[in-house]
Image 1: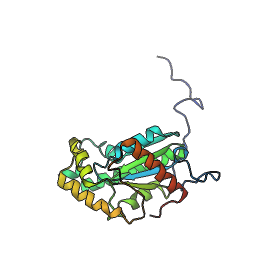
Image 2: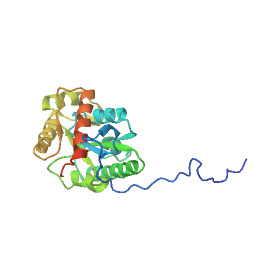
Image 3: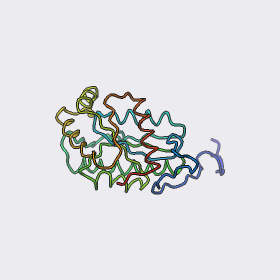
Image 4: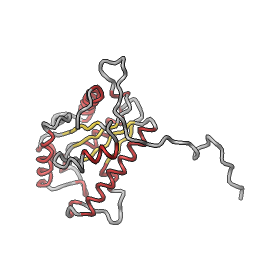
Length: 223
């Protein structure tokens, strides 16, 4: 058996990566009256109820950007836990809350590292306005002050239709969807940008998200 090759600086496996610190506020180019969101390094948090289409929109938005962009789905990270997965549909308890918080912290760690290495990211989560410390406050602690939150909130009938097309533990009861949608209405008047995509397809919603992110870069929302 041949001996392993000697370590060489610059060879794959020995690349030094910048550590990820808190994400700062994005700085628009001074020569642009309106920032080009598709070419700016950003961290976006897409908020919405189950069935809002936020994961589909986030993935599409990341796919079409002109700079490297990652999509980080909180639900996907939660489901990394296979044995012992605490599904909140079976009852919200200490285990399900702990796994939610752990997933958010893991997503925040990933977002900071992507940004530190020149890759933008968009995260998606069902963050409730009536739990600011756990929700937005937690994301701000995990990612940094430069995180740009955007709410996607279509009408209840649309959310119910889209939820009916889901499967597995991603599909909720109509009662639960209605309850979550009602809580999400609290984002109106919060100062965060809101996109109503009730009558918009994915491509159009992604373009609307571009416009909202551009405005947020020029004038970050207070949250």
